[in-house]
Amino acid sequence: MTKVKVCGITNLVDAEKALEFGADALGFNFYPPSPRCIAPAEARAVLQRLPEGSCNIAVFVNEPKEKVREIITHGELANGRQAYSALQFHGEESQEYCRGWSMKVIKAFRVREKKSLEGMEQFPADFYLLDSWSSGYGGSGAAFSWEWLEGLKTEKLILSGGLSIENVGEAIRRIRPYGVDICSGVETRPGIKDHAKLKEFILAAKGA
Image (cartoon, rainbow, N blue to C red; front, side, top):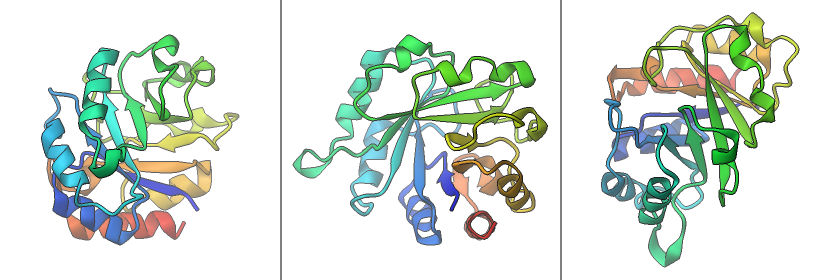
């Protein structure tokens, strides 16, 4: 069954509801310009209240490795338990940058045209997240052409960008990705989730 990642988590209630509705992973955004950015201390306060074993992903954009390590270390919970299960790099990070981490790596690619996918599979990452291109590093809210994915292996793909309750089932049936990623499509405003939409989206994705 396709995994569902809910990104842009900024508070405990949204995190708990996402897990209650069946989300497989939660994304915590540490990119300061983003309206969904959460401070490391605030993230840690949320993570301490989540059930052990929840899959929590720390999202970074072009951060120095030292800063990433600092935030990850800050996220350690009781008994030295690591709060984060994976790192997502959503900027222009190089192949070399993506090597050598002690946890799984998701490398995001902003897809503007089919050529945006060239060289993707050479990156040393466990998963590749495909988002629609925008002038910044946030999602545009629009889907890119799924036809561009024809011929690609999809078992390591996480599909993002313009997904909605209405189209996520079609996307999963057509592309067969490892997972889907939702953020703005289930929000009342940036960083605050609409719980009814969140539940509908997860149900639609799981039922595809």
